Length: 61
Image (tube, rainbow, N blue to C red; front, side, top):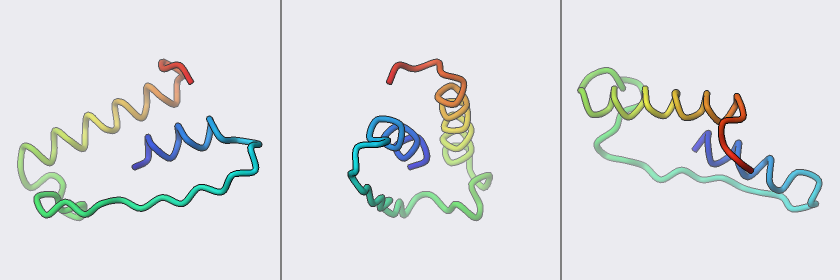
């Protein structure tokens, strides 16, 4: 959701459009215990890597 928000806030900046974000719950992912299993840990770490790439301008937009 952070990458989505980051991207859309950049794209729609100064457009006058108000965006509302709503994440879907994932029964297999507990954000309070993301390290508890390999799948959740990998998902979390890759999202932070991607978010860092977006913040450093490694994507177009």
